[in-house]
Image 1 (cartoon, helix red, strand yellow):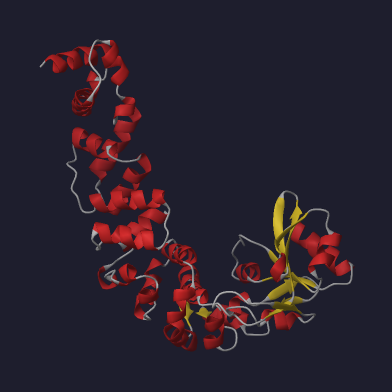
Image 2 (tube, rainbow, N blue to C red):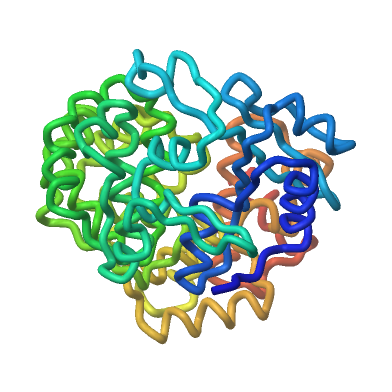
Length: 392
């Protein structure tokens, strides 16, 4: 079976092989090719040592040279080339304390996490599959290479990767691998919250976000954070039809959680402030009715970013009337916020009004009037009304 590789990958393999070294495409790209999917990343494994790799290619970056990885730059893209290696002890439950280079491809493959990620390929050899990866692809099964307890003990993040791959691929986790997740879950306390959040987010953004249930069913949630463990998973439904945006899926996961507690969950996981703010907005509006009339829809739209309003349409399953009004309001270019009001604070000051809190109150009253009647968003008219408000 011959698989199609990008020309740049073929060139890297050809150069390494022509100079007496073994080299293969490896890992997730091979898995995806066998599944008929377009790989996002292309990794290469080779018997060449890092210095030898660097000597063969004019443009390289020492991205992970401590662990044998060199990035080869070709046609504006980077391709990671890693020397066959055997990992030493994983003293911190995440990273090997040392690596030992080897000339044996199988030694390199057997250190990897799951059988479906432990395959290599090159045209003249075909697929190298020593651990039943292709069979597991056919069975739609996530299974550790070798002993699951050992693999998860080496790197506890693999626990969440197993659940994430099951969600992304629609696979089930093999029985012994599933049991090992519960046993080694306490080791997740050693993993950075940022890395945990990335895996959880990928799970939520997958086509099977319901697989997040594995985090709760196997006792993993308690080792993520106390607040995360209190999420009432049994009451949660995350439809795959919801927009695949990080803040939307996290809001769906936290929908049954007190807003302050929801923010605590996100902060514990070192979530970026932009995502936290958008989740807070969706949760604040969760379940709220909006009257299907122009003014209430304009007010609701003006209270949040446009993309968050669009997400709220799906989040709250608003009906066709509100969606139609949204389109009409945007097509007409109605003013929805102070930024688009025909007058600003300086305009009112220039018209003789004093700066201060009252000025802000008047602007908000003018905006409220325009939200009710967009035709009034004319500078001259608003200045006159504003001055009258100031005198009253």
